[in-house]
Length: 218
Image (cartoon, rainbow, N blue to C red; front, top):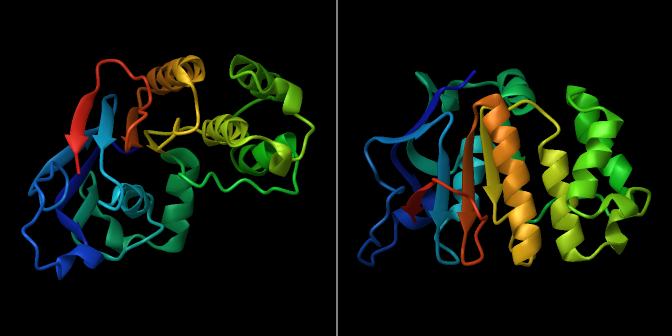
């Protein structure tokens, strides 16, 4: 279980040699940023300021940054592949901006790829969550035939098919209207509350309709 994620003087390598005056940031180059389990964070950013990089750094997909990221007292650079795989099944959940659905697989098959690793949801639960987001009727349809907004909702359900301490959502509602945004936010908040987990959601504009969140600016 991860209680706190610490970011210490973290900066993407791509920004390290930028000779322009540094943009004020609540995240980059902060000496003691704490993300705490059970809280909600909205990371607002302009395009190109590193929001997707932040999610990838925390999730361990990328390590091209300066500074340190610690899970409680453990420097994430010391974790091996086995440790990362374990954390991604029981502690860290990610919805990437590009969603990463397999276009040739059905909605059911895409979700089963994740749920098969964790065995966290019953089919009945998955169908109920899809129905709540109004995409249950697409259950047997290939993901590549769905609209971008429908794909985003399916990818969200897939991300929730595991236990987690921190839920990382990279622009999770960028293609959703206000009604679907509210439905997605309600589901995310309910599932995070049930697990006592933190939500870290990024946005460049249309942000997840969370309540009681802390805003961080990149």
